[in-house]
Image 1 (cartoon, rainbow, N blue to C red):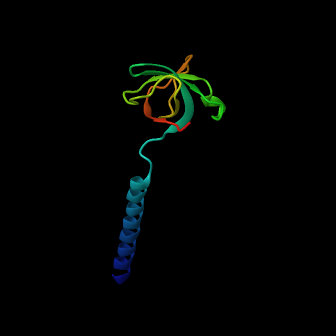
Image 2: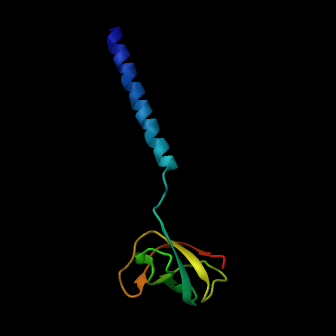
Image 3: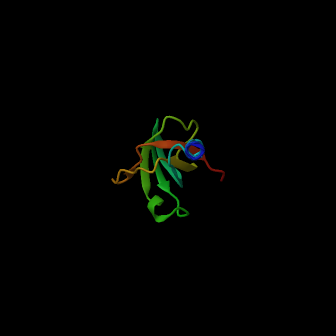
Length: 108
C-alpha cells in the first residue's frame, strides 16, 4: 500500500513539474514572430507607404515594399526607417506587407 502511495505521489509531482514548465514556457515565449528590415521611404500618402530596402539587409529585403500603417506620425519620403512586420509577404511587385507591426525612424 505504501508503494502505491509513493508511486502516485511521484506521478503527481512529475505532472505538476511538467505543467509548471509548460506554463512558464508560454509566459516567456514571444507572442508573435516578427522580421525587421531597414529601408528608405520612397513615398507616403496618408497611411500608405512605399519603402525601398537598404543594401545592409539580406537579399530578401533589398527590394521595394508597400504597406499600410496607421502610425508613423512625422515620417516622410526620404526618411530612413526600420520596418517590423509579421513575416508574411505577398509576392507582387512591389512586395506587399499585409501586417506591419512597427515603423521606427533611424538616426542618420
